[in-house]
Image 1: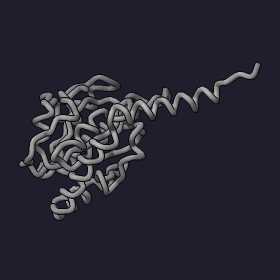
Image 2: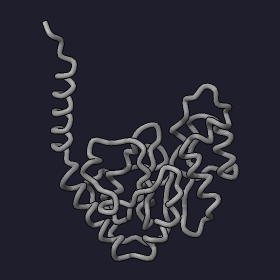
Image 3: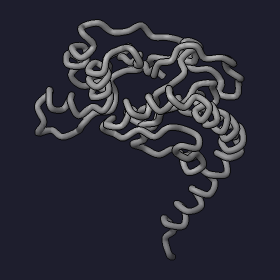
Image 4: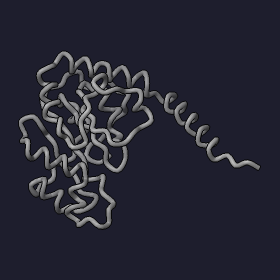
Length: 206
């Protein structure tokens, strides 16, 4: 995964969190495929570009959000949104020093979600796509849900700042859910059942 160097999700991460900010690092993936759009219109449909624009508007007191690389679409606009300068890539251990971690899809569902749910940080999830285990985790139980247009993000970060005990309860439930519901054998069972269903749909009568 670009932007962060991840570690094994089964490893227990830092037991304390120091920085009361919402953190995200990544690249400008996740684009519109409408060929009639101008390059600028297409770039503004990147949900990650919109995230950077949102963060720029809302300041840095509660947010540490930015691109570490430009890999798709009109990189000029993405760089413009960053004020002309990208942020350095950081290790997962640096991310886990923050109280709040944002997860947002790119071209596919975000692979960093399970390691983040294992951490001592509260996860904010902007969910556009599904992963095999998403029906096993619930909003406000294991993570804080965020609208695709980020219209509720500021309010929900403030809720977390104002409700430390409840936020830490969500973190503990997330840790437990990942250990109990996203094991290798759970994923194996999911794909076995999926392939059985898919095979039944593809069966040809002879």
